[in-house]
Image (cartoon, rainbow, N blue to C red; front, side, top):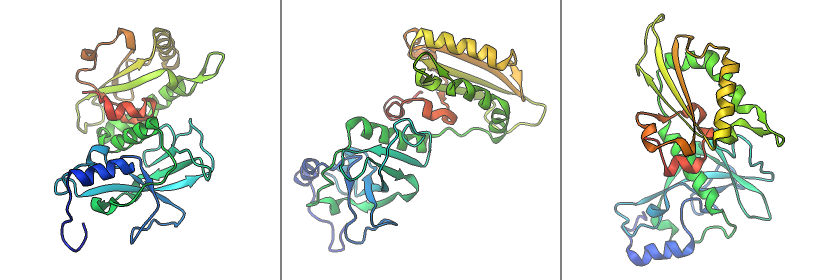
Length: 277
C-alpha cells in the first residue's frame, strides 16, 4: 500500500479494477519502481481473479505477479506450453508484436493491490483457456506430491523410462502421441517413508483414458513393454489400472492423488478446477 496510509477502498474500487480488466492472466508493462530483469519483459498477474478484484484491501492487500518474456514463436505442444516444465509456462497472446509470453515462476513477487487503480492492463488479449491453463500450471507448482526419495529413485530406474515410451509413442494414422489420449494419471503408495534395501514399496498407478479404445491400447502396451515384469521389480510391487472415462466413477479415485511426475499428461485446467481427492 502507499506510504500515505491505507487508501479508500471498497466496492467502487473493486468494480473499477474489474472494469479495467484486472484478473489472473492480465498482462502489464512495468511501472514505477516495479522493474523486471529485462526492460522488454512484461508482468503477468498470478493471483486468482476473485482476490484481484476483492473489495476488501485489508484481507487481500497484495497481488502476486511474475515476469513474462516475449516470444516470437509459440509451439502449442512444446513442454513449456503443455505444462511439462514446472518452472516456465508459455502463454499464447493475441498480439502483432509477439506470439506468447514465457512466464518464469521463479520471478514471482508481490505488489500492493491499490497500485493497480487508475491503471489498465495491456490491450492484447489472453484467451480464457490460456488463463485456465496458467491457473493449473501455478496450482501444480504448489500441489506437487512429495514421495519418499527411495521410491523416486526406484521408479526412475526402470518404471518411468518404460512408461514414458508408451506415452511418447505415436499412434494411428495421425501419429498422435500416447499422452494425448490420457485424461489423468493418479497414484497411491505405501509406506510413505524411507525404507531399507531389501524392503518393498507398494505402488498403484491409475491411468484414466479418454475412451475405451485408448484404454485397450495402453493395456496391451503395458503387457508388451514390461515383458511380464509389471508385478514386482526394482524393489516395488506394482499395480497399474487403466480405465476409460465412461467406465469410471468418482469413488474409483478414493485414496489416490495426482502423480506429479506426469502432471503434464493431464490438462492443466483440470489441476486447478478438479483435483483428485
